[in-house]
Length: 402
Image (cartoon, rainbow, N blue to C red; front, side, top):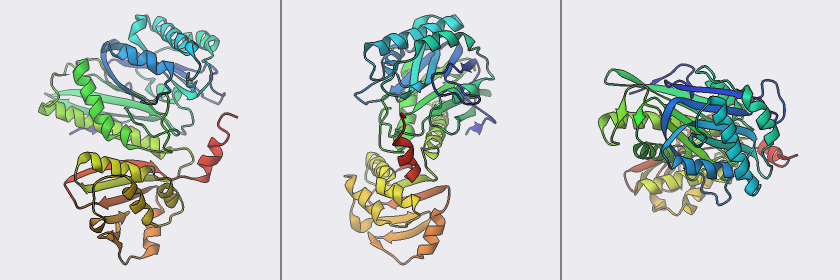
């Protein structure tokens, strides 16, 4: 139904441009970037989902208020400073950064959104922002620079684009994301920016992004902690000539499927790049009595500290999966539960069955470990993703600010 765009990124869709520079907000490194702008060449529809943490960055507060209009040219993002827990100055700085970015590309200030990521409790170094914003020059070839500029503890940029055909015309969806720690989204850290050249009104766009976020960014976990800055933004500028005027049409369903794929791939890239992690954990829970129960159970298993440690140690201790399932609170009968570890069944009817421990250990010694948990009580399923918990994670985060 869709094709992967080779070397695709957030500027792959028609009419999207980006640029980035290094201003010194984060520590210097070769090829470092820390301020970036993503923009549409014309006024776009916009929709977003945001952190539900009660401690919120003023950058989120400003962007959330501007997204309500449903229209935006783009977003300026910085890494190295979360602009959180800094009092009223944080909102002033967010507003000024938006103003500087809008002047740089000659658009109205209220059409520019702001995102920040990095250390909490530190004011944005606005003198540096003022000095270097003018170094940002936008073009359609700088999507990867945008992806690099939003990285903090990430070890790699996270980007993707896909194309679909509607009525013989091509529609592209591109995206970029960042995140490697403080990941347990519930919203909608992590930041994700998605662009499409389809024409979609804001209310319909909101439905599309909320549906996709529920299946992707809301189903991942690295460390159980939810950021003050979580934001997902979706821009639609209409430059493909294809429009979606309702969410349930066959063409709209194709778009929704492609958008969800983009979001899932970006979400998995975040988890795969978890601080200190070596393995991606995929948890499929099926046979649940409701979709919500399947989601809750899958997330509970994927976010369990003991399950994460079990995967790190290549320990086929399936009892930890059962423990996490049991504390999830979902409706199931223990006597009906089946558990598979990387395709090898280790539990049937809630009890251990004969299996070769060495074979399970060997299957876990991979970059991806898959758990399948069958509740055998209904027809609903859901997938969540996590990563193993390593000594490196503890070491890294014990000295994050020093």
